[in-house]
Image (cartoon, rainbow, N blue to C red; front, side, top):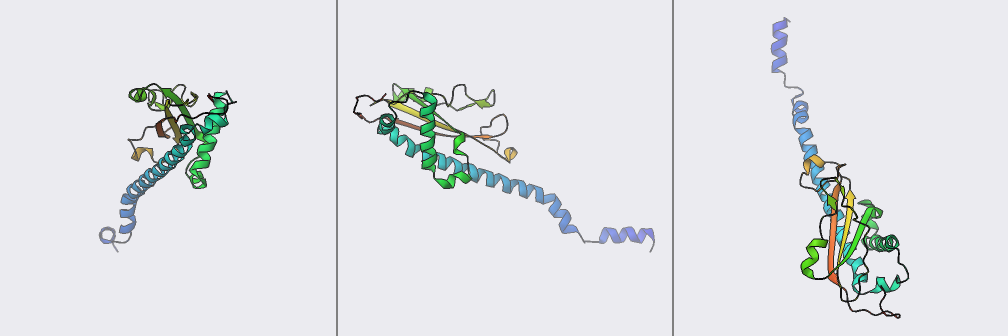
Length: 196
């Protein structure tokens, strides 16, 4: 065989075409599949966080949490007890999706429902790429008939951040998963009067 006929045979050979096509299309397909899986995981995490927070704040609405913890005045201890309740309320299935100990809670009392928006901002400081200053450290005791804003924030790792540009992101690429609850506390009474 001459070198010219070898070149013609090489150009006509269709062996390996599938491998070349997969090498061109495969990475795009895998990236899209990863982005879809990432979005589904974030939705599951968000749903678990929402459900757990709604169940947890019910103890604040009724005053049960305030009555049970009336002797505790340390803010971090109270926030830790609320986080424990949230972990218990999200169930064991959420453990596969996020670490509940990474959830930060923020509880504030506002005067009117119109002023809720000032207490209900994002937990993420976009200019620094980190938590807002003071987020996760505020606990104002929900007294009877007061309006309360409870915010829960979670720093969730993202593996395909380039495919999800609309996610609020921390500086390290993790996504912010946030859940909020706004409610008026029921007029509860404890044995010693006001639990706060």
